[in-house]
Amino acid sequence: MKQYYGMSRSGNLAEAIQGLRNPQFIMLLSNDTQFEEHVAALEKAFPGVPSIGCIGMCYLTDVVEHGVGVIAYSDGVTAAANVLENVSTMPVKYIKRLEQDIQTVGGSGRDTVCIDFCAGNDACVLTTIHTVLQRRGISLVGGTGDQGKVSANGRVYPDAVAYGVVRNQTGRVKTYKENIYHQLGNYRFIASDTDRANYILGALNGKSAKQVYKDILHVTDEEILTRTFQNPFGKINGDDTCIISIKEVQGNALACFRQVNDSDVLILLELGDYQAITRNTIQQICQDFPRRSAIFSVNCLFRYKLFSEHNYMQTYLRDMAALGCHAGFVGYGEHYNNRFVNQSMTCVVFE
Image 1 (tube, rainbow, N blue to C red):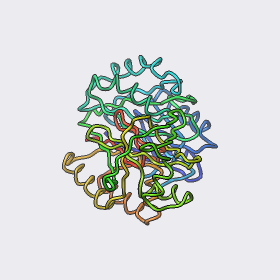
Image 2 (cartoon, rainbow, N blue to C red):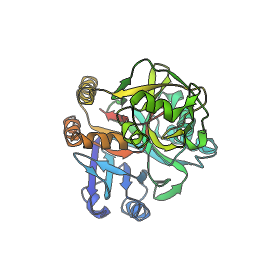
Image 3 (cartoon, rainbow, N blue to C red):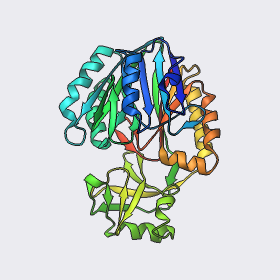
Image 4 (cartoon, one colour):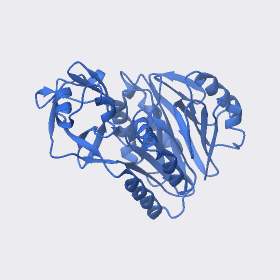
Protein backbone atom coordinates (compact mmCIF):
# COMPACT_ATOMS: atom_id res chain seq x y z
CA MET A 1 0.00 0.00 0.00
CA LYS A 2 0.96 3.66 -0.37
CA GLN A 3 0.26 6.74 1.74
CA TYR A 4 -0.19 10.11 0.06
CA TYR A 5 0.17 13.49 1.76
CA GLY A 6 -0.64 16.79 0.11
CA MET A 7 -1.23 20.21 1.58
CA SER A 8 -1.81 23.87 0.81
CA ARG A 9 -1.04 26.60 3.32
CA SER A 10 -3.42 28.91 1.48
CA GLY A 11 -6.32 26.44 1.68
CA ASN A 12 -6.24 25.53 -2.02
CA LEU A 13 -7.61 21.98 -2.16
CA ALA A 14 -6.67 21.55 -5.82
CA GLU A 15 -3.04 22.13 -4.83
CA ALA A 16 -3.29 19.61 -1.99
CA ILE A 17 -4.63 16.82 -4.22
CA GLN A 18 -2.68 17.53 -7.40
CA GLY A 19 -0.54 14.41 -7.03
CA LEU A 20 -3.26 12.06 -5.77
CA ARG A 21 -4.18 9.18 -8.09
CA ASN A 22 -6.73 6.39 -7.55
CA PRO A 23 -7.16 6.74 -3.76
CA GLN A 24 -8.98 4.01 -1.87
CA PHE A 25 -9.42 5.96 1.38
CA ILE A 26 -9.04 9.71 2.06
CA MET A 27 -8.68 11.84 5.19
CA LEU A 28 -9.28 15.60 4.99
CA LEU A 29 -7.84 18.10 7.50
CA SER A 30 -9.27 21.53 6.84
CA ASN A 31 -9.74 24.96 8.42
CA ASP A 32 -12.85 26.41 10.03
CA THR A 33 -13.73 28.80 7.19
CA GLN A 34 -13.35 26.41 4.23
CA PHE A 35 -14.33 23.04 5.69
CA GLU A 36 -17.71 22.65 3.96
CA GLU A 37 -16.25 23.88 0.67
CA HIS A 38 -13.36 21.43 0.89
CA VAL A 39 -15.62 18.49 1.77
CA ALA A 40 -17.79 19.12 -1.31
CA ALA A 41 -14.81 19.67 -3.61
CA LEU A 42 -13.05 16.51 -2.41
CA GLU A 43 -16.15 14.41 -3.10
CA LYS A 44 -16.45 15.96 -6.56
CA ALA A 45 -12.82 15.17 -7.32
CA PHE A 46 -13.03 11.57 -6.06
CA PRO A 47 -16.71 10.56 -6.11
CA GLY A 48 -17.57 7.44 -4.14
CA VAL A 49 -14.16 7.05 -2.52
CA PRO A 50 -14.56 6.47 1.24
CA SER A 51 -13.49 9.61 3.09
CA ILE A 52 -13.57 11.23 6.51
CA GLY A 53 -12.61 14.74 7.55
CA CYS A 54 -12.45 17.26 10.36
CA ILE A 55 -11.17 20.74 11.18
CA GLY A 56 -7.60 20.57 12.39
CA MET A 57 -3.93 21.07 11.68
CA CYS A 58 -1.95 18.53 9.67
CA TYR A 59 1.72 17.67 9.27
CA LEU A 60 4.37 15.79 7.38
CA THR A 61 7.77 17.33 8.17
CA ASP A 62 6.19 20.59 9.37
CA VAL A 63 2.77 21.67 10.64
CA VAL A 64 0.12 23.35 8.49
CA GLU A 65 -1.97 25.41 10.90
CA HIS A 66 -4.59 27.18 8.76
CA GLY A 67 -4.62 25.63 5.29
CA VAL A 68 -5.75 22.20 4.13
CA GLY A 69 -4.17 18.77 4.12
CA VAL A 70 -5.10 15.44 2.54
CA ILE A 71 -3.83 12.02 3.63
CA ALA A 72 -4.86 9.11 1.42
CA TYR A 73 -4.16 5.41 0.92
CA SER A 74 -3.96 3.48 -2.35
CA ASP A 75 -2.50 0.35 -3.94
CA GLY A 76 -3.69 -2.35 -1.60
CA VAL A 77 -6.34 -0.97 0.73
CA THR A 78 -9.95 -1.95 1.33
CA ALA A 79 -11.91 0.67 3.25
CA ALA A 80 -15.34 1.88 4.30
CA ALA A 81 -16.28 5.21 5.87
CA ASN A 82 -19.38 6.35 7.76
CA VAL A 83 -20.61 8.26 10.82
CA LEU A 84 -22.29 7.65 14.13
CA GLU A 85 -24.59 10.61 14.72
CA ASN A 86 -25.96 12.22 17.89
CA VAL A 87 -22.75 11.47 19.78
CA SER A 88 -23.72 13.81 22.63
CA THR A 89 -26.84 11.78 23.38
CA MET A 90 -27.02 8.33 21.77
CA PRO A 91 -24.24 7.22 19.39
CA VAL A 92 -25.20 3.57 19.95
CA LYS A 93 -28.34 4.21 17.88
CA TYR A 94 -26.18 4.03 14.73
CA ILE A 95 -23.85 1.21 15.70
CA LYS A 96 -25.19 -1.14 13.00
CA ARG A 97 -23.45 1.06 10.44
CA LEU A 98 -20.08 0.16 11.94
CA GLU A 99 -21.01 -3.51 12.21
CA GLN A 100 -21.95 -3.56 8.52
CA ASP A 101 -18.80 -1.72 7.44
CA ILE A 102 -16.56 -4.13 9.32
CA GLN A 103 -18.34 -7.04 7.68
CA THR A 104 -17.95 -5.44 4.26
CA VAL A 105 -14.25 -4.71 4.68
CA GLY A 106 -13.50 -8.05 6.29
CA GLY A 107 -10.13 -8.48 7.91
CA SER A 108 -9.05 -8.88 11.50
CA GLY A 109 -6.93 -7.18 14.12
CA ARG A 110 -3.85 -8.33 12.23
CA ASP A 111 -4.49 -6.25 9.11
CA THR A 112 -7.37 -3.85 9.90
CA VAL A 113 -7.65 -0.62 11.88
CA CYS A 114 -10.40 1.90 12.64
CA ILE A 115 -9.47 5.59 12.30
CA ASP A 116 -11.90 8.16 13.70
CA PHE A 117 -12.45 11.93 13.87
CA CYS A 118 -14.83 12.94 16.64
CA ALA A 119 -16.86 16.07 17.36
CA GLY A 120 -17.18 15.50 21.13
CA ASN A 121 -18.33 13.25 23.98
CA ASP A 122 -15.30 11.16 23.13
CA ALA A 123 -15.27 8.78 26.10
CA CYS A 124 -18.85 7.63 25.43
CA VAL A 125 -18.19 7.37 21.70
CA LEU A 126 -15.10 5.22 22.17
CA THR A 127 -16.88 2.90 24.58
CA THR A 128 -19.67 2.48 22.03
CA ILE A 129 -17.34 1.79 19.11
CA HIS A 130 -15.21 -0.58 21.18
CA THR A 131 -18.16 -2.89 21.78
CA VAL A 132 -17.99 -3.73 18.07
CA LEU A 133 -14.25 -3.56 17.42
CA GLN A 134 -13.23 -5.75 20.36
CA ARG A 135 -15.14 -8.72 18.94
CA ARG A 136 -12.81 -8.68 15.92
CA GLY A 137 -9.72 -7.60 17.84
CA ILE A 138 -9.53 -4.43 15.73
CA SER A 139 -7.68 -1.45 17.18
CA LEU A 140 -8.65 2.22 16.91
CA VAL A 141 -6.64 5.42 16.53
CA GLY A 142 -8.13 8.89 16.18
CA GLY A 143 -8.78 12.23 17.74
CA THR A 144 -11.03 15.21 18.31
CA GLY A 145 -11.50 17.87 15.64
CA ASP A 146 -12.50 21.50 16.06
CA GLN A 147 -15.85 23.32 15.79
CA GLY A 148 -18.04 20.31 16.66
CA LYS A 149 -18.39 18.87 13.16
CA VAL A 150 -16.88 16.16 10.98
CA SER A 151 -17.38 14.83 7.48
CA ALA A 152 -17.84 11.46 5.82
CA ASN A 153 -18.22 10.61 2.15
CA GLY A 154 -18.79 14.18 1.02
CA ARG A 155 -21.24 15.26 3.70
CA VAL A 156 -20.75 17.40 6.83
CA TYR A 157 -22.24 16.23 10.13
CA PRO A 158 -22.54 18.10 13.43
CA ASP A 159 -22.41 16.19 16.71
CA ALA A 160 -21.00 13.04 15.12
CA VAL A 161 -17.99 10.79 14.87
CA ALA A 162 -16.64 9.96 11.42
CA TYR A 163 -14.74 6.70 11.06
CA GLY A 164 -12.89 4.72 8.47
CA VAL A 165 -12.39 0.97 8.64
CA VAL A 166 -9.13 0.39 6.77
CA ARG A 167 -7.72 -2.99 5.78
CA ASN A 168 -4.13 -3.36 4.65
CA GLN A 169 -4.08 -6.01 1.91
CA THR A 170 -0.28 -6.18 1.85
CA GLY A 171 0.61 -6.72 5.50
CA ARG A 172 -0.02 -6.10 9.16
CA VAL A 173 -1.17 -3.06 11.10
CA LYS A 174 -0.39 -2.12 14.68
CA THR A 175 -1.31 0.82 16.91
CA TYR A 176 0.84 2.62 19.47
CA LYS A 177 0.31 5.19 22.24
CA GLU A 178 3.14 7.38 23.49
CA ASN A 179 3.13 8.90 26.98
CA ILE A 180 5.88 11.41 27.82
CA TYR A 181 4.80 11.79 31.47
CA HIS A 182 5.39 9.79 34.66
CA GLN A 183 4.05 9.99 38.19
CA LEU A 184 5.11 12.89 40.41
CA GLY A 185 5.70 11.81 44.00
CA ASN A 186 3.20 9.53 45.71
CA TYR A 187 0.17 11.79 45.41
CA ARG A 188 -3.07 9.88 45.03
CA PHE A 189 -6.45 11.59 44.87
CA ILE A 190 -10.11 10.60 44.90
CA ALA A 191 -12.10 12.95 42.66
CA SER A 192 -15.43 14.42 43.83
CA ASP A 193 -17.78 17.32 43.11
CA THR A 194 -17.40 16.58 39.41
CA ASP A 195 -19.61 17.77 36.57
CA ARG A 196 -19.34 15.05 33.94
CA ALA A 197 -21.10 17.02 31.21
CA ASN A 198 -18.72 19.98 31.51
CA TYR A 199 -15.56 18.04 32.48
CA ILE A 200 -15.35 19.85 35.84
CA LEU A 201 -13.10 18.55 38.61
CA GLY A 202 -14.31 20.14 41.84
CA ALA A 203 -12.43 18.46 44.66
CA LEU A 204 -9.52 16.13 45.36
CA ASN A 205 -9.61 14.19 48.62
CA GLY A 206 -12.36 16.54 49.75
CA LYS A 207 -10.40 19.75 49.14
CA SER A 208 -10.65 22.33 46.34
CA ALA A 209 -9.02 20.86 43.23
CA LYS A 210 -7.56 24.24 42.32
CA GLN A 211 -6.04 24.74 45.76
CA VAL A 212 -4.58 21.23 45.89
CA TYR A 213 -2.88 21.78 42.53
CA LYS A 214 -1.56 25.20 43.58
CA ASP A 215 -0.26 24.02 46.94
CA ILE A 216 1.69 21.08 45.51
CA LEU A 217 3.27 22.95 42.60
CA HIS A 218 3.47 26.41 44.19
CA VAL A 219 1.80 28.18 41.28
CA THR A 220 -0.69 31.04 40.98
CA ASP A 221 -4.12 30.84 39.36
CA GLU A 222 -2.68 32.37 36.19
CA GLU A 223 0.15 29.85 36.00
CA ILE A 224 -2.08 26.76 36.19
CA LEU A 225 -2.96 26.72 32.47
CA THR A 226 0.65 26.72 31.34
CA ARG A 227 1.83 24.42 34.13
CA THR A 228 -0.48 21.67 32.83
CA PHE A 229 2.07 21.20 30.00
CA GLN A 230 4.54 19.99 32.62
CA ASN A 231 2.12 18.62 35.23
CA PRO A 232 -1.20 17.25 34.01
CA PHE A 233 -3.31 14.84 36.02
CA GLY A 234 -3.43 11.14 35.30
CA LYS A 235 -6.34 8.74 35.66
CA ILE A 236 -5.38 5.18 36.54
CA ASN A 237 -6.91 2.76 34.06
CA GLY A 238 -5.77 -0.75 34.89
CA ASP A 239 -2.03 -0.87 34.16
CA ASP A 240 -2.23 2.30 32.06
CA THR A 241 -2.58 6.00 32.87
CA CYS A 242 -4.85 8.32 30.89
CA ILE A 243 -3.55 11.89 30.83
CA ILE A 244 -5.99 14.66 31.82
CA SER A 245 -5.13 18.22 30.76
CA ILE A 246 -6.42 21.28 32.59
CA LYS A 247 -8.45 23.61 30.38
CA GLU A 248 -9.25 26.50 32.72
CA VAL A 249 -9.90 27.56 36.29
CA GLN A 250 -13.56 27.86 37.30
CA GLY A 251 -13.86 29.30 40.78
CA ASN A 252 -12.29 26.74 43.10
CA ALA A 253 -12.65 23.99 40.49
CA LEU A 254 -10.68 22.96 37.42
CA ALA A 255 -12.23 22.42 33.99
CA CYS A 256 -10.46 19.65 32.10
CA PHE A 257 -10.22 18.43 28.51
CA ARG A 258 -11.61 15.00 29.33
CA GLN A 259 -14.29 13.70 31.65
CA VAL A 260 -13.57 13.05 35.32
CA ASN A 261 -16.11 11.18 37.45
CA ASP A 262 -16.73 11.06 41.17
CA SER A 263 -14.52 8.41 42.83
CA ASP A 264 -12.03 8.32 39.94
CA VAL A 265 -8.49 7.71 41.23
CA LEU A 266 -6.14 10.42 39.99
CA ILE A 267 -2.41 11.00 40.28
CA LEU A 268 -0.22 13.97 39.41
CA LEU A 269 2.20 13.62 36.51
CA GLU A 270 5.41 15.33 35.48
CA LEU A 271 7.11 15.71 32.12
CA GLY A 272 9.79 13.14 31.39
CA ASP A 273 12.67 13.05 28.91
CA TYR A 274 10.41 13.39 25.90
CA GLN A 275 13.26 13.23 23.37
CA ALA A 276 14.44 9.88 24.74
CA ILE A 277 10.86 8.61 24.91
CA THR A 278 10.15 9.49 21.26
CA ARG A 279 13.41 7.82 20.22
CA ASN A 280 12.30 4.68 22.06
CA THR A 281 8.96 4.74 20.25
CA ILE A 282 10.72 4.99 16.90
CA GLN A 283 13.04 2.13 17.81
CA GLN A 284 10.09 -0.02 18.88
CA ILE A 285 8.28 0.63 15.59
CA CYS A 286 11.42 -0.28 13.62
CA GLN A 287 11.76 -3.48 15.62
CA ASP A 288 8.12 -4.45 15.10
CA PHE A 289 8.04 -3.40 11.43
CA PRO A 290 11.33 -3.69 9.53
CA ARG A 291 9.36 -2.64 6.43
CA ARG A 292 6.78 0.12 6.72
CA SER A 293 4.34 1.41 4.11
CA ALA A 294 2.82 4.23 6.17
CA ILE A 295 2.44 5.76 9.60
CA PHE A 296 -0.57 7.89 10.54
CA SER A 297 -0.43 9.67 13.89
CA VAL A 298 -2.44 12.03 16.07
CA ASN A 299 -0.52 14.48 18.23
CA CYS A 300 -2.21 16.52 20.94
CA LEU A 301 -2.41 20.29 20.57
CA PHE A 302 -0.66 20.61 23.94
CA ARG A 303 2.20 18.38 22.75
CA TYR A 304 2.51 20.59 19.69
CA LYS A 305 2.67 23.69 21.90
CA LEU A 306 5.11 22.07 24.32
CA PHE A 307 7.43 20.82 21.57
CA SER A 308 7.26 24.17 19.76
CA GLU A 309 8.15 26.09 22.92
CA HIS A 310 11.20 23.86 23.32
CA ASN A 311 12.13 24.16 19.61
CA TYR A 312 11.66 20.41 19.26
CA MET A 313 8.67 20.08 16.92
CA GLN A 314 10.67 20.23 13.69
CA THR A 315 13.21 17.75 15.04
CA TYR A 316 10.43 15.44 16.19
CA LEU A 317 8.76 15.42 12.75
CA ARG A 318 12.09 14.89 10.99
CA ASP A 319 12.85 11.95 13.28
CA MET A 320 9.43 10.42 12.63
CA ALA A 321 9.89 10.97 8.89
CA ALA A 322 12.91 8.68 9.03
CA LEU A 323 10.45 5.82 9.57
CA GLY A 324 9.10 6.35 6.07
CA CYS A 325 5.90 8.07 5.04
CA HIS A 326 4.65 9.58 8.31
CA ALA A 327 1.74 12.04 8.35
CA GLY A 328 -0.96 13.04 10.77
CA PHE A 329 -2.97 15.74 12.46
CA VAL A 330 -3.02 17.79 15.64
CA GLY A 331 -6.05 16.89 17.75
CA TYR A 332 -7.84 18.24 20.80
CA GLY A 333 -7.78 14.79 22.39
CA GLU A 334 -6.36 11.45 21.32
CA HIS A 335 -8.08 8.10 20.90
CA TYR A 336 -6.50 4.72 21.51
CA ASN A 337 -8.88 1.76 21.38
CA ASN A 338 -11.47 2.61 24.07
CA ARG A 339 -9.33 5.26 25.78
CA PHE A 340 -9.67 9.02 25.46
CA VAL A 341 -6.42 10.72 26.51
CA ASN A 342 -4.80 14.16 26.45
CA GLN A 343 -1.24 15.35 25.80
CA SER A 344 -0.38 12.07 24.05
CA MET A 345 0.50 10.68 20.64
CA THR A 346 -1.33 7.75 19.10
CA CYS A 347 -0.49 6.19 15.76
CA VAL A 348 -1.09 3.27 13.43
CA VAL A 349 1.71 1.64 11.45
CA PHE A 350 1.02 -0.18 8.20
CA GLU A 351 3.43 -2.85 7.04
